[in-house]
Image (cartoon, rainbow, N blue to C red; front, side, top):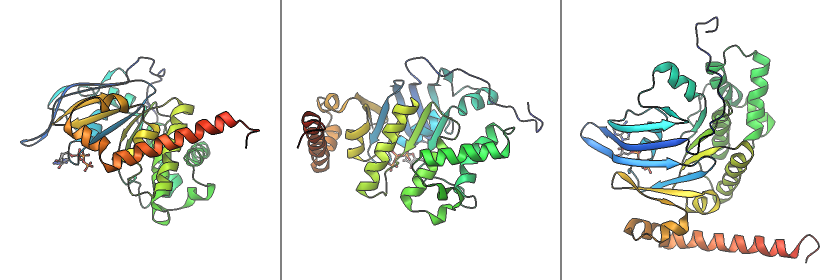
Length: 288
Ligand SMILES: Nc1ncnc2c1ncn2[C@@H]1O[C@H](COP(=O)(O)OP(=O)(O)OP(=O)(O)O)[C@@H](O)[C@H]1O
């Protein structure tokens, strides 16, 4: 306990197991409206898993259940080896400090500057950190998220949509998380901004060793950075695998999603990008 009576997060080692998220037999519902029924999903450590599905199929509710914000009517949810559904408040706070979340729209506090937004989780979980150190950590996370130094003192209303996403990402990274949850991070961004955000996500995953749970409708994101994709339909995860693996399934939604006009365009653009990268590699630095 610190002087304010708050419990500091327990000291822990990084999770070394193979599966930082294991959901089994999950049921969620609002009144009589059942969103998930017997849903299971296992996420591999270090991967970027894309989560797709039609509107209203329960992608965000699944994320909220995994991070303990949505009660499960049945089933089990294990995050970083801890049972989330039945965790007591202390155990929950201990594991809660080990993930970061970028909600749809960024969910920044509008009355706080970007820097203060990023400082918020640090204040909550590490209230004993000195002010100047906390400010320095926040500034570092802002830079890590690809914003300029002067963004630290700006208010969310002074930022573009893309910058707000990066500010939300900086806050999600505040506690050096092992898991990063991103809910439609490229929604509303222009294609160039979206591609930059994708690259940033990939770089962070690789350099910080993150596992990323990424909800998206963006086919380019799936092709560019996701190791596997989980498809939600009919209240369950109906398939999970690499895109080539998913293409072999004969579910009509998966077929239409990946083989429809947008799916084909995303695939063609990925093939073009790969072949350009290959020819640049072959030409080498001295090539034409
Ligand atoms: N707090 C809530 N109260 C009642 N129903 C809710 C609540 N939150 C979500 N729902 C319902 O749960 C279902 C799944 O919602 P969710 O937001 O997870 O869908 P989604 O797959 O993320 O959709 P989208 O792709 O449009 O963002 C929807 O029918 C939604 O109306």
